[in-house]
Amino acid sequence: MAEAEKPPLLRMQGIRKAFPGVVALDDVDLELHSGEVLALLGENGAGKSTLIKVIGGAHLPEEGTIEIDGQSVRIETPQDSLQAGIGIIYQEFNLVPELTARENIFLGQEPSRVSFIPRKEEHRKALALFARIGVEIDPGKLCSELSVAEQQVVEIAKALSQNARIIVMDEPTAALTPREVEGLLEVVRELKTQGIGVIYISHRLDEIDAIADRITVLRDGGHVGTRSMEDIDREQMIALMVGRSLDKEFPARSSSPGKVRLAVRQLTRGNKVQGVSFDVRAGEIVGLTGLVGAGRTETARLIFGADRMEAGVIELDGQELRVRSPRDAIRHGFCLLTEDRKGQGLVLGQTVQENFGLPNLAEFSGMGLLSASRESEAFAQYVDKIKIKIVSHAQTAGTLSGGNQQKVVLAKWLQRNAEVIIFDEPTRGIDVGAKFEIYQLIHQLAEEGKAVLMISSELPEILGMSDRIIVMNEGRVTGEIKEPSEATQEDVMKLATQREKLAV
Image 1 (cartoon, one colour):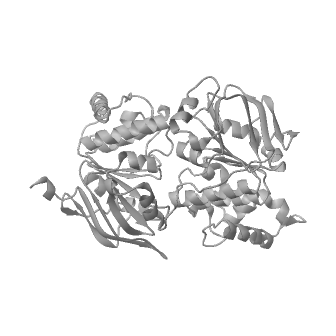
Image 2 (cartoon, helix red, strand yellow; image 1 turned 90 degrees about the vertical axis):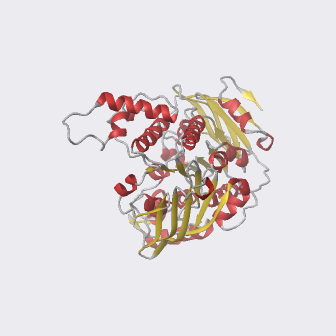
Image 3 (cartoon, one colour; image 1 turned 180 degrees about the vertical axis):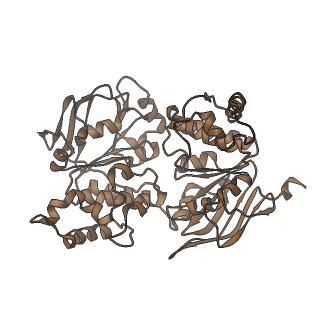
């Protein structure tokens, strides 16, 4: 059979999957070819995760067909998916931290007719798998001792050990450094040369530009288009995902900063934060960036009182503050939206209204009793104002998309009339349409005269959103970019790897 006539490695047609009250997938088609990276794109709630669970045997569709190499297959269980040559690497790894890399790769594949595990043979095979991927990892090292990027590679090796010809990666770079991201993309490129088909899910469009051959876009459970990367630009890609045109990835804003509101001087805590000083003015968005471990989050925690500083001064509107705890910071009008909104920003099992009310209980209480009606009225204003998409105030926070979870966190702090707002990775894990809405909210806060400090690892975001950029490395400020619109990602990276302070 001629190459052009070969059937796709994977073909899904007319896939439909419904849950009570919700049609998650409706007549969805997808094709993946050998040696191809197909990016699966869409906003949160578009149906990507459900489609992947259909491929992985976790969900059985009501309608539709699946073919591999032109042959119809029925995938009813995860074991069926594995036998069909499909490996799913979920965002939450399926590894046992207390086992070695080798043991994790071959877990469940141990011979059943002998009483011993061929450790030397498995060690040799693991080395061969890592070599095939193009990386060096000690098979005898515990997974708990591996970096996130190395654990990602172990997951890939595990899939290859089971003869996977189709590998699905769900947000594989969410917790990786820029250097680790490039390393993973090299691994994906190597997999392509071996004829493996990769379905790649990511909200980071830079990665899609770098790695994808084609894109398939889902919106509201439907298939809205498949395009070759040669035939689509970034703006068209975004328009397909969100169903509307975003003039730019970052909303335009004219900045006229006022007086200094937040001033930090010589903040110090061990070697994590060493003599950090900067200002944030009224109506100004200051970006704080650097490589992982640079001390960005640690600096934010000192300002918010989550950690005790060893030295330094924090001032608000020219007045020195005593910030020894988050309670002190909140009382002075500070708020921190943490990078781990699920673990630190929300109580996922509580309702969205209860989460909104947590830092505002004193305002909504009297005589020791909480007024749920007052709490509900206040929350309703923010549901309308910042467009929080919820079914009801009683919806649990854990069921919301990442963008709407972030909005709930923001709403509870806005109710306290926060004047200094610190965003730590404000759009991590958030789709492109919701990102734009978060960016608009950040702009709105600045226009109201708030002092906004935004920490981000995404260089396009830092350059596109900041009025000024402070760059850190190894706990120190190594540079300041005063005109982000005239700077490049290379300028930021130069400062992020410097040891001495420079300016751009």
